[in-house]
Length: 118
Image (spheres, rainbow, N blue to C red):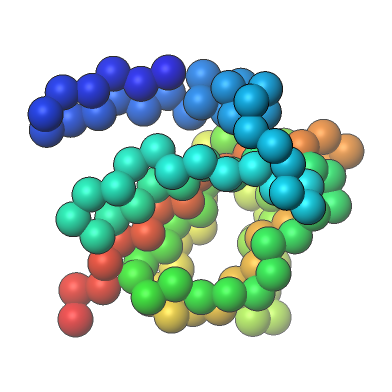
């Protein structure tokens, strides 16, 4: 799943996702795992069952949401971004957004939050 040294960690989202779905209990159709946390940056893997939404929220840092499987929609204000696998959306600090698994299969995505530079 991962390979780690003192200063680097190789992440394998596909292997992490398989393990997450096999071992982590679903809480309201959602599974998540922190893959990396360092110097204020966090990388989190999410799996959502079909139709499940992470409700509207904001983060204090820059956010990227990258689809890695299934159908993912990111709502930002009046805009809806439909992400295909490998596509991502980037959000400025404090931007409110919601994420929904819209397909018939579970959706998976990786979120990175980096500290604000201000």
